[in-house]
Amino acid sequence: MGRGRQKAKHTKVARELKYFSPDTNYSALERELTAKADEPDYSKWIDDDDDSDDSFEPKDEQKRA
Image (tube, rainbow, N blue to C red; front, side, top):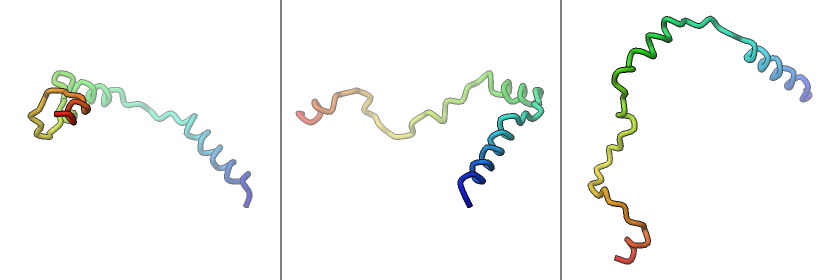
């Protein structure tokens, strides 16, 4: 088969995705957004490595010492 049939199928799928608009449940969205608005969760950004050296020294200076 040629490229034409494959391209036509991709175009059809892309058009369906572009114009598809599902109904939005605004009450569920509001509940989700207000559930954790009071206390942000920063635990996913905390680095659990046990690095006690908080000072910054360029690598060049570390090699000389």
